[in-house]
Image (cartoon, rainbow, N blue to C red; front, side):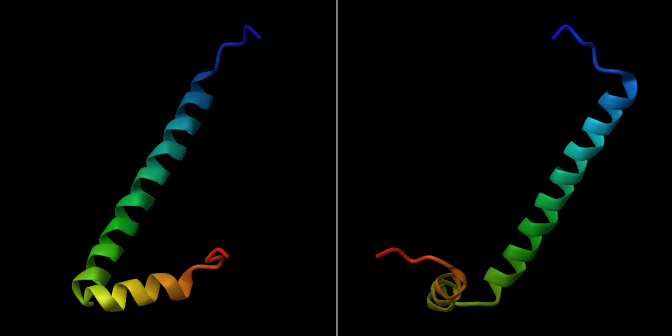
Length: 56
């Protein structure tokens, strides 16, 4: 459409991307802590229990 983003739009987009990035880091750390405290069998059971749809 030929429109050029303003400086405020670039800043806003950057803030959104930084927020997503930080959220992913936090989630990864929580998963690593959780996994280190459980056995493989417990992890599989937890994943299956939290799945909403398991198929046919």
